[in-house]
Structure formats: structure tokens, C-alpha cells
Length: 136
Image (cartoon, rainbow, N blue to C red; front, side):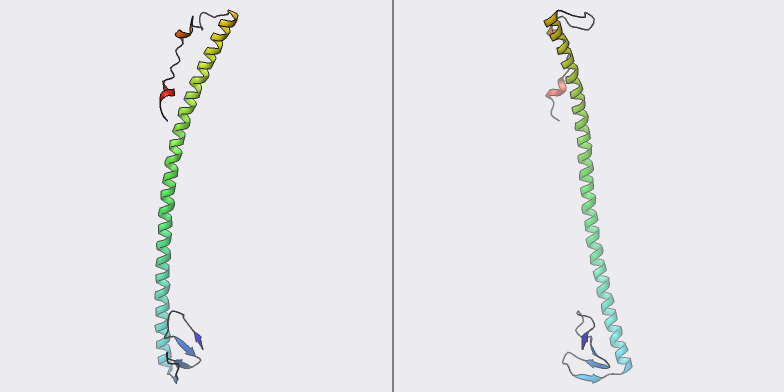
């Protein structure tokens, strides 16, 4: 005796004999066997469709989660690009300020001053470093 489908308790078979839940074999006609087989096949097909629908729902949920994660990461990427741009601008301003201070220091230490490029004193520097006080 074998179980054709573990979910269908009425689908027990013993070669040509049909066995009810009471385990009492009886001879069945070919028509009865065919009807029983059709019923079992329909039930199996119904379960297969249900499993397919459940799998499809799980996949849809996964797609939604991946799309939400992708959107979050895309937004984070854009935010980091903007922050990187701000930092590069600030870095450029700081390098210019450093260069000006180095030239000014050289002038103070060695008395060399190019009147076209060098301010007369430190208060004449135009650093324009307002971005240093702004949060990112």
C-alpha cells in the first residue's frame, strides 16, 4: 500500500483494490478507479496552484523589499555625492587659504612681498570660508 498524495487521506491504493480509511479492501470498477484518480488529480492540481500562488506572493514581497532597499540606497548615494561635493569645495577653499597663509608667512619671515598678490597684513585676506560653519 502506498500513499499517492500525503495531503489526500482518501487516495490510498493497493494495486487494483481501493482501500477506505477503514483499511477494508474492496473490488472497484474501472470507472470508480478513474473517478477516484480524477478526484485525486484535481485535488493535487488545486494544491499545486495554491503553492504557486503562495510562492508568487512571497516573491512579490521580496521584490517590494528589494525595491525599497534600492530606493534607500539610491537616496543615500545621492546624499553622499552631495556631501562629497561640499567637502571637495571646502577642501579647495582651505588649500587656497593655506597657500595664502604660507605666502604671508614667507613674506613676514623673509621680507619678500609681491605687491600684486600679497596683502599688506593678515586682516586683508579674503578667506570666504563661510561653508566651514555650516552643517553637512
